[in-house]
Length: 427
Ligand code: HEC
Ligand code: HEC
Image 1 (cartoon, rainbow, N blue to C red):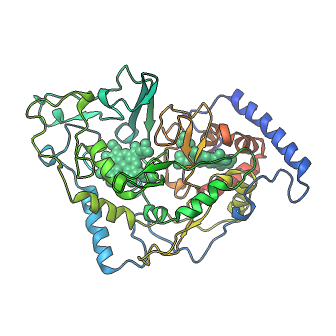
Image 2 (image 1 turned 60 degrees about the vertical axis):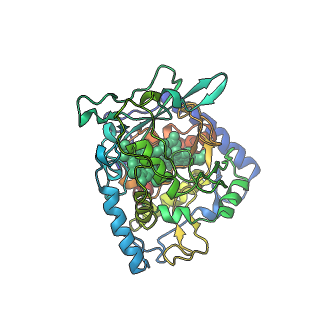
Image 3 (image 1 turned 90 degrees about the vertical axis):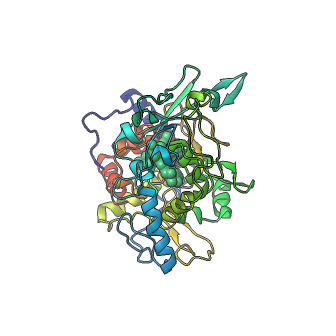
């Protein structure tokens, strides 16, 4: 990750908007100073969650390794799961009729298997939505909610269904880049009560994250959404089955129906494998992702330590919460472990520049999950659609609940900003 202020070819939000945010910030600083009186002027951060210097109790991992303290059986499940995760599927195994990738690892590969995507043209996915009769719709009847941009024509030129495209009925078209999966099991093991407590806490700057409560289709229970750009899915298992059918066109007992190409009925012979097309792979994906170790941070330099403190006082940590701890867990690898996620897992109103209009569960068109910043130094593209490649560009698009923190960031001295960037580069 580059630490430069700007980078060649980088899309930055217009200077005008940045300046405007800066003005908001100055106001925020003034107000805080006027009523505060304690501590550093303008401190609006989450004081008790601000500083997290090198912690020897958090193990260091090679990217892509499995969690420590796994039993021999779990080690084996992890290794076997990784193989299935990286296996390319063919049409005679259920791939298609339309799909986005032939294996999970094709999109999740940056740094190690399980990582983010590398090539935007192959790993960025299109999600659509629109209004039908005054109500929000996933536009399933036109090929939504996810567009599959490849088809089995690649294997057989006479295959009847071409790739999908975003239909004219789509009022909202959102690009979504691939998220990394490192540490997913730890994220899943954070107690619901701790996320609820976080949502109920009062923060400065107008920060008011909410929980994306979703129905788990496996159990029918209402649970906290944690996964995906809008925290739209509550468990690794549901996401695995969802990805299998939406990205690869492979049906499972949980999602036994094919995604119909552009919403149209399947032509005779287009789908020879009976549904559900696979009953075992989902569990293998889960075993791999649940036991995948989190990204490790590098040792903190003096500047990075200063940046960590500034990350708190600037207000970034109000959403990018440095730490949760997992609850009691039958698996020692997941039991009472620190999760240095730099996310509260809540969704926040992020302003019009990031808003994509897509509604997922309780998350509205302008709401996104606080992007976890662990491992952010290994990322190439930032924000849900990958529009940014530098930290400064990513922050420049922070509006809505994040506008005051972003303004404070751009109003800070160059050396303070450098310190924050150095800190982010240590994650
Ligand atoms: C064509 C690219 C592509 C393929 C293939 C793909 N994914 Fe993904 N994956 C994505 C994108 C894009 C997202 C972000 C989706 C969103 O939230 O809108 C994602 C997100 C996820 C997440 C959520 C992680 C988080 O940060 O919360 C999980 C879990 C996941 N994928 C698992 C899988 C599994 C398992 C497979 C194989 C069955 C798979 N993916 C195949 C592109 C892909
Ligand atoms: C109100 C909550 C909030 C605050 C405050 C906030 N962020 Fe964010 N941040 C988010 C959300 C939500 C996203 C994801 C937005 C999207 O992708 O559309 C994000 C994304 C990011 C990303 C990109 C990460 C990725 O995976 O793509 C970086 C870097 C980042 N924030 C840094 C910061 C810094 C530095 C500050 C302080 C100046 C800050 N944020 C303040 C909510 C917040």
